[in-house]
Length: 285
Image (cartoon, rainbow, N blue to C red; front, side, top):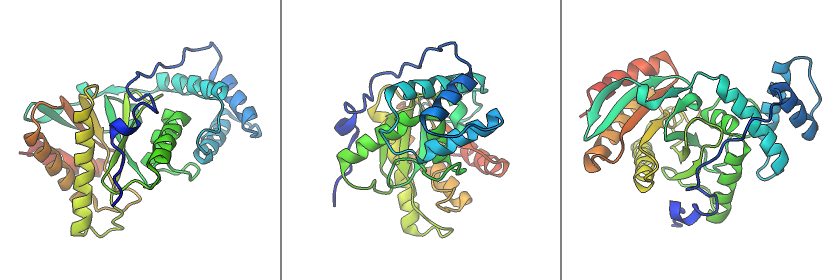
């Protein structure tokens, strides 16, 4: 069986350990930046700003890696930075602590993972690792890539070209987070359960969480991480079983690796998931 690349195999090619320096505002308005990008991408204008932004979002979802040139990437980065400044960003350190295991504080936070300021967030990726190519698709992969910018897809493409084969289930790759408030994105491929969490699916899901934590242990820059509900979206892993596996796996790993990470946040999007995770985290051993 082929071995997936480790962090050290690709870190230099994507400048992983060089802090991303956000674009300096040019003084141009969001609409001026947006109009410039629409023109560069050959898109027709639309009657409202919202319509224009939606058209850009859809186009970028389908854009192949390394297509946008440096000038237009800079324009996009400026637009995304202006949008980030308008969001209500929350610090991972401000999320309420429900438990503490071997020096690591555990929290549950309900909200948009692209608005949490933490060292790393987890992206539920597919095996091609390039993000979602379905225009405006409401998956976390699409949300993260859209808010980060095209450099995220470019980095993932560089890694996958080096690897030469699809990412195995349960493995992880790390990129910088670009225009997100976090510093890094951990892209992991969870099992496709389609509603049936077999023993193999459960082991694979646990491995995805372990791989993310191990990546954090290998990178001293990462002291806090926000997990999404891996595989519980379009991959169809039953949410209540996935939550138990997530919390149990994280707890077991922390017992084996004390004082490795300062904060683990379980990010949930729905009220139902919030109510599901809180008692599990509070009672984790």
